[in-house]
Length: 178
Image (tube, rainbow, N blue to C red):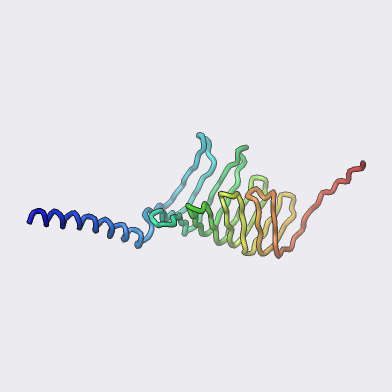
């Protein structure tokens, strides 16, 4: 009788743990934060600051992600200490793919005064690439602008490919006499 009771208790404990894991995954995020002001450092130097009213952590899912349902602001600094800022009404970061999806009133202002307004913006952190297939407007530091339907660009905007656009570009052409 004692052996049967002990076996029953151990089998219940195993089932209880499995049920508990299923419940956590089915109910939603494993953690939730409010009024988050998260600072990222590298070798003691501030490289990014994430500010959000709400952070939902879904790292308990097989394809883990973090969600920012009430919007976010991220300030980040390059190696020279120049600051850029991005804000949006909603954001989600997919951990495994290292992809950020920003939606609603996305505004990016770079350290060299480039300003991007978009409905949606993706940032592929692994490939250091930003892109959208939604309407956008970019105002470059020289005052030229690009109004379009979609673009792909390196994250520093040195390589920029736009499709379906209208804009004004200023070109400085120097002719070398040889």
